[in-house]
Amino acid sequence: MKRITALLVVMMLLTGFTALAESAPDDVWESEFEYNQNGTLVSYHGGEVVSVPVKINDTEIRKIGDGLFFDADISTVYTGEGMEQIGESTFENSRVSYADLAATVTYVADRAFANCADLTDVVLNSDQITFGYDVFMGTGHINFTVPCTADLTVLEDKISDAKGDNNFSFVKMHTALIESMTETDIYGENMLYCEACGFKGSKYLDDISIPFEDVSQDAWYYSYVATAYDFGILSGKTKSVFDPDAGLTCAEAAKMAACIYSYQTADEYQFEHRGENWYDVYVDYCYQKGIIEENVTFDWEQNATRAQMAYLFSRCDAKPYYINEIPLTDIPDVYDTTEFAYEILDLYCKGIAVGSNQFYAYYPDSDVKRSEAAAFVSRILRWDMRIVLAKG
Image 1: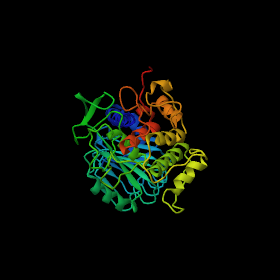
Image 2: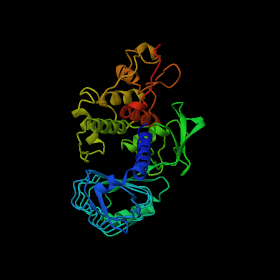
Image 3: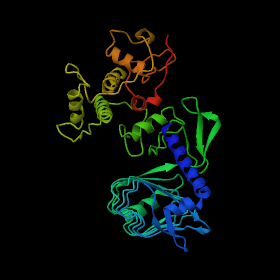
Image 4: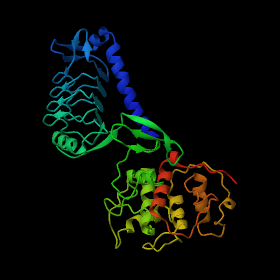
């Protein structure tokens, strides 16, 4: 839901700006911009949010002039379709944080965004763009939103040269989404397709590029693996293999619990290796934060049972959110004498655990599968992925 909303916002902003650029009276543009007959903007007198026109009177605007917003107190920039060039040092030293460059922008000159300390987001509506020298020099991490058909390898080389480092990331936006009328996702909702790139996914799934060859988009756990992977909680066995049916050790479950708690509480704890075993730092953290009680211990290198996973995942959830009222008697194979019975019940009441059949059976003594762990992690961190259960 969140990703699709973001895409719609991007498309509405672009559509809204294009309409504004075409319909705004010339006196509005003339009150904010000065320009020359070559179609270059040379001066600006407006506010923090800059909407760059593509035509004033009968003059087509094709370039934002050199140094136009140098050291300017602006926050957001939108360029209309038809703009072609961003001049040298145009935004250098400014307070701009968000820049949306139209698909028609083909050249961004030297140091155009240099030393923009607040710049965090840049939308490139085309990958057919050339950067001059040091365009993004002196900036922090930048998230580049690019078309779904963009060649990321080419763009990565261009941007790393223009930025002087690799402190940036990509998000792909789909501009040709259609809704399938015949195929549904795991929620029973119509699947979405992108006619431009062939992407297929759920309305509830961010467009996450996962590298696992053994996780099909048709698998029930695809959205969960993608979400857990995107949060950095669950990785693959190798770079290309997730192994969804494999077991999960107690140590691996403790690591996930520690990372979930750290993420939810925003404590930015640094899990640096210490101790004899790789997992010692995560287990110690779980005890320190009360995720694991002092009298509870596990065989860390053995596969975790579903009951043990429930204990860890119930207690690491620092932001509890309940959507179900399920009595323990509704879970046919869990009793008040079952180990970690009330942690299991807690996950049912939160919509995190839903049972393995129509009778809500939990199978507490069975080993956890990695695909199941991904589902639990995703539902903890994404409330919109939790599942409402019928009582009784």
